[in-house]
Image (cartoon, rainbow, N blue to C red):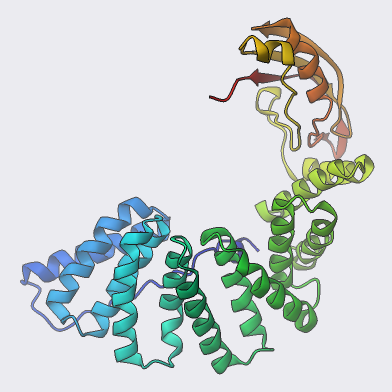
Length: 366
């Protein structure tokens, strides 16, 4: 699941095939170095470091291979993609348009090779509110994929899920909900609820519903995501932990504290306990700012100490330090009572943790 979850933006890194040119050629040597560094930084996710290398490789590639070459087209896409992922949307658009025009000439207007470029150009236009352009680009990409794989195939469903996620979270386009739901429905039907890909789609639908505070709608998606972790038998991972944490939040918001405890316990079993200093709640509500302090423009903080019991609940909170105004104390105590923790486990059993402290700040937004 971890490998699957890393797919957020379609990245089309071109494997450079050296042309027969003399190694003494200074431009070629510089190009090779720039491209190698671009590739390394891209794989590391160091986008700011890869950008100047992508640009240099793109500029030198046009000189070395010709502006109409396949190599130049792919280098243009890499550079445009890098700009897009750094959210330089206006700068990315002309480079991606250039890449698309070149791809169409080289591969044809109906080639599946165009899909990454169409999607990235769609994302760029979505982020600068060019709705009509973006819709046409997305529609064209989906049509090309459908032509190759069929609309009911697992391949098309997986493409729909990944693209829908990109549209929602990267392009900030709510229209991505439809392909995400469509892909999830096909995967669930064809592969079953406990398949890794179905679980990944369900997890992201749960996140989408949660982002809109639709707690009841989000719950079944996260429960299906958990099924896929159980099926694979893989070691606990960040996706599984975050699924349990999301369910803790959902059940607390729905007033189902006992159900929240089940998932708090699951997280505790999966994670080692280090110290009370690094012990943070997995769910909490912010304190209510007292009106008297707000009217007087007072700011400050309260340090509260308490015990976290075997279910991850806060017990016996008490104020140990107050700075700013005594009126902050009761809201701070009320707030920590809403906190949920992953219980500490010793020899396979949950135990209480005493002396846990939390510092709650009261700051007026300016």
